[in-house]
Amino acid sequence: MMKDYDIAILVVAAGRGSRAGAGLPKQYRPLAGRPLLAHTLSALLKIAADARVLTVIHPDDHGLYDDCLTSLDKVHAERLLVPVHGGETRQESVRAGLEALASSQFPPHIVLIQDGARPFPNEPLIVRACAAALDHGAAVPALLVIDTIKEVDEGGKIVATPARSALRAVQTPQAFRFDLILEAHRKAAEAGENGLTDDAAIAEWAGHAVHVFEGEIDNMKVTSAEDLAVAERRFLKDLLDVRTGQGYDVHAFGPGDHIWLGGLKVPHDHALVGHSDADVLAHAITDALLGAIGDGDIGSHFPPSDPKWKGAASEIFLAAAAEAVRARGGMIAHIDATVVCERPKIGPHREAIRESIAKIVQIPVDRVAIKATTSEHLGFTGREEGMASMALATVRLPL
Ligand code: MG
Image (cartoon, rainbow, N blue to C red):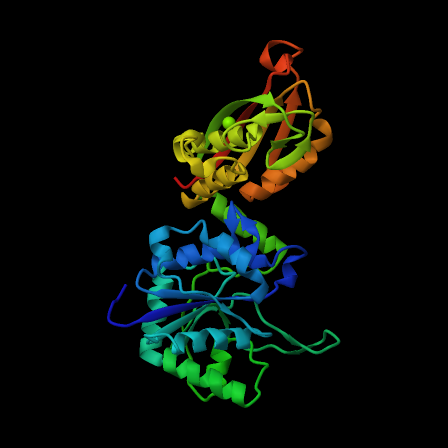
């Protein structure tokens, strides 16, 4: 990257994404183990090593945004600015981001405005964007249109066939001299101009010549549920290092009226005894995850000798192990665990336990299996002196 100018990348992620179907806003949907927006931020921080990155988010999405940050490289993430809140429209959201940059200590010289739902930017594209902004003041990545485009009326009748050679499909990042696009956005807002759908249109509206530079065919925008599936397949192709870890844990019964299993409180006529909350299942899965990434065990991360962990909720340990997988750029493909006890009966709680674990490790519930068995009254579990649990975790890491 060139270093003689100051670049900020504004990532627009405040939308609700209704075209991708029900559920989370699309930019927070998990794809190959982490949210779509985390893929976008991770790619930008990595390939634009001199840029600050500011994300515009919906005011309701702070928790979702914070979840995105857990999977980012810690050194790269230092260039992320505190997110700002977007407005009712994309135009308002971008302006909120530009104003935040304008009031920062060092407003940038160049700003690249990127859709949060375009997770495949590459370095040549960013280099071209910066060069085009310097050369022209306002420029957008564009591709030649391959299909013939027809203009139709409301009845579906074709009314015009524009010359294909003059058409371009436009992507992001759109690239601008910062003062130019800030001024254009301010003018449009003052004029009550609200119907402009991209930043190039705002620069055009303000009277600036906007140029195109070469886009990238792979720089897809994720809009529909089908796009989510296509994007996930592309990410999975990078996670070829498949590993399995195993974990095993035992806790003794003592007095009490409930036990913890996978972060779920289960009524019982005894409790399990331990330094933490003695969640035998969460401990086995935590060790399986740590085993899969070769990162010690639960005792080395959360030593029982440390008073900090006395009575601790084991979901902290489990969540930390899952985060360690994400921090490696990986995903948890599957968790399969068995609980060994005569009582309590696990069956009635199985689905709730699966859901609890899925939520803690942030994967879909269909990637979590929980099984239970007695030991036919044999051994310490058979004598109801305690419970045991075994777990396998399969993770996929970048090769
Ligand atoms: Mg334990």
